[in-house]
Length: 313
Image (tube, rainbow, N blue to C red):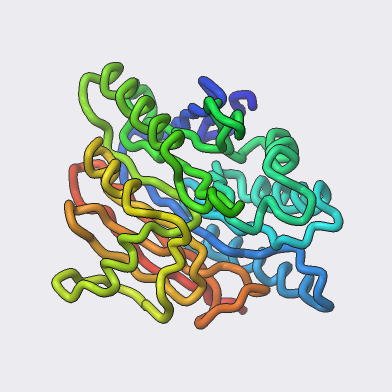
């Protein structure tokens, strides 16, 4: 993936390391999180709903003029009879929005005979998509996790960092695993050594952490938004959150997966746990689909979060 000529500029330093350089010297960074679009169902008439999904997301991007988009998994259904064509169509849509879009795998994305490597091959042709990977010393050989530095114009140090994780799909791997946490700790250590200090960071992935359930249950903590179902944290055992606390750079996490939750709140240690706001019209949902606005401050202030649904004509 080469550096693009339009602003902002995306450059790739390594297979798992990217930089987004914004063409300005300050002001908050605004991200639109979209999740669980479930594009490509073979059920009769669903294609019309997918077209409406695209229209709604474009309306949000135009309305809020976001800097970038974070797609937190289940972009596609498990049904992919035309895998490459479907992925290429999604790439074309997001590329036409002309801003960086970060993608992490959901549990349904690699299903249907068109897996991670095939999806990544199509996305590698994109001018705006960000999807990285790194090698691991086990049977998987590689995991689709990556780090994105967000820099302002002429600033060598990132204002923020985003860690993207593949939270898995196969039985026995439906959570962020130790080999991925080792990678995260190493990348964080390298960043600290390079910049002589920790960089503020958020993390995006698909399957929620078990602490999302703790936040929902523990009345000593509060959250905003809707919690209409239990947390399907699959195989997460709490180690991911504990590792984030140990390293100390992650201030918020944003996931998808559970269609009837859109809440966010701080949990033990001060990390914000945030659900996406369901984005797919083809997806089962409890409210009109939309997205989540995430505003990253540059003055040391708090992250701002808002659920948004477009006002359609």
